[in-house]
Amino acid sequence: MSTASVERPGLPARIENSFSIAALAVMAALPLVEIAGRELIGRGIPGSIPLVQHLTLWIAFLGAALAARSDRLLALSTATFLPTAWRRPIQIFTSAVAVGITACLVAASLDLVRVERQTGETVALGIPVWVAVAIMPLGLAAIAGRLIWRADERWRGRLLAASGLVIPLAFGFIPAIQEAGLLLPGSLLIVAATALGLPIYATLGGAALLFFWNEMVPVAAVPVESYRLSASPLLPAVPLFTLAGYILSEGGAGRRLLRTFTALVGWMPGGLAIVTTLVLAFFTPFTGASGVTILSIGGLLLSVLTQARYPEKTSVGLVTVSGSIGLLFPPSLPVILYGVYSQTPIDRLFIGGLLPGVLLVVVVAAWGASRGWLAGTGQTPFQAREAAAAVWEAKWELLLPVVILVCIFGGFATLVEAAALTVLYAFVVECFVYRDLSVWRDLPRVAVEAATMVGGFLIILGMALGFTNFLVYAEIPMRALAWVREHISSPLVFLLALNAFLLIVGALMDIYSAIFVVVPLIAPMGVAYGIDPVHLGIIFLANMELGYLMPPMGENLFLSSYRFKQPLTRVYLSTLPFMLILLVAVLLITYVPAMTLGLLRWSGS
Image (cartoon, rainbow, N blue to C red; front, side, top):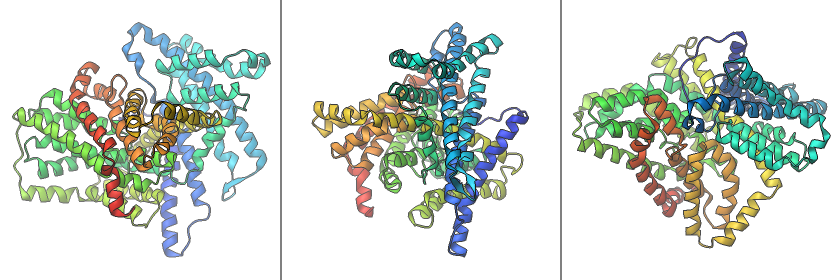
């Protein structure tokens, strides 16, 4: 995902930006006021928690509209492999399917708004629930309009894409369509469109709508489940940590950390490879997506590596791989989402993931360093004065993980409050201590970028909740569990099969989609085979980190190809040695549970 600034938007887009910025600002401010009220007068603000939760819903759909505006809705990128002449009709086709599904979702969410308006319930401070829910049809309608506009540069192509709007009309006004047996052709249509680039939210939302409709269940069940985004007490931490990460990455934190790690470990053979791994692994947990680190500071790191005579192949592979190996460290958003979605304690996941995360960093750094040493790259002599000066300059960024861990595990703040404190910390450090960012010139742009990224995967979560609800309704997880138990008796064989399955999943979908779709299937299987839920979670997340690098669809492969202007095949070859080493590390994490559970037992967690 690009963090590059965009051209000055028109008035409607500026209004949309302003709502997104305001929603993020209020989300960050309310938990801070809650902390202050609790400390000063012994109580917080009445209704602040549900307000923050419902603002998550707003960020999800506002951000998704922003993602549609900048053509950054998450989708498979298979169309890039097809002949150029095919891409225009494929784009029109997938846009028409996405428009039809989105229009159906608009109609279903309008039904939900109507129901909520009749109930008359309020969120807090007299704000009606239906006002909060209204963002769903508004955001979806904006997405549909932008899908039509971006379908083609010509009006003929846009009109063809707009033909998808007749789908909800057909279902609403042709009663006989219920008996037409559309489940199989509809499913095949969605699968084909997904393979050609249909946005993932439309895949999940369309499948949920189709299956519920086939069972004669009101399709409003899908937006009803999406509304559950406002029911999670932990989910607001996701946009807040993302905002903090974007503030850090857009400031000078990358430059300062590069200087610090170079001064500390640059004297080692292949030290610059170790520096690169540490810098990217440090940043990734804060941004919530490995792609952000590759796009924001990957170019700087690649230039430094090649200037130090590291082979270009090794350099590209190292930066591409290092962008995905920090996702087990706090405050990683995938870990938080996995904990929320699987109902696994998040603090236990972070503790359990510490040693596996270190292992992944060590093996990548070691391989990169060995390649640099064999190539005869230079080393930076260790100078105590430079090391001390570099650490002192970057002290505020280096202290941030400590602040977060103390707040969460010391019991001083909830996860959402810690996320809000992180935003405040990053804001003060980058805007007032270092003055790398201007409050008025840079911060609004950074907030819009953060909202775009968050909306891109939160709308997938919303649709996945509806799809998962159908899976539960159809008892799919229980049937899958029965089949697996019938054919696999050994927990060790199950873990091997799980690794193979997750590698395929990681190669075909992003980590957030995988959490929402796959976790409901594998969680009961893990319980049935006696696998600790924390160990299962770390196995899942470690495999997903490896999935970022799995051809043909690994997300980091495409981002690296885009950022470094390298052919995909060359990126594949550059990352292959690292991928094989990481595969061995993932197998160690899988079959040595003490690596995950030992620290938990030692700490008594």
